[in-house]
Image (cartoon, rainbow, N blue to C red; front, top):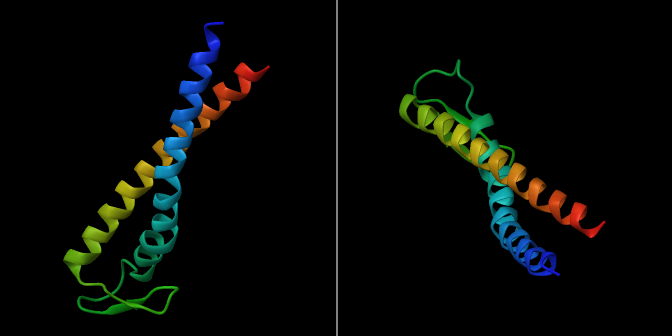
Length: 97
């Protein structure tokens, strides 16, 4: 009897995490990855790269360093969210049995 409220809480937490996760996933795949990949590390100061959407990205030293840092931060958040959501749905699956 005590497991039912825990299941409901876990299901609500899973849904809330998915609501936050999906827009972040779209932002990560649609903006963060293409802008990071547009600038190569060997590019000269002031060159512009083109991302997969056709937008020009300024690849000077500061924006390139910021882009790399932002990509690493976004990747860490993405991996953390993926692990937490995976664990929540794993526990929901295990409690169903």
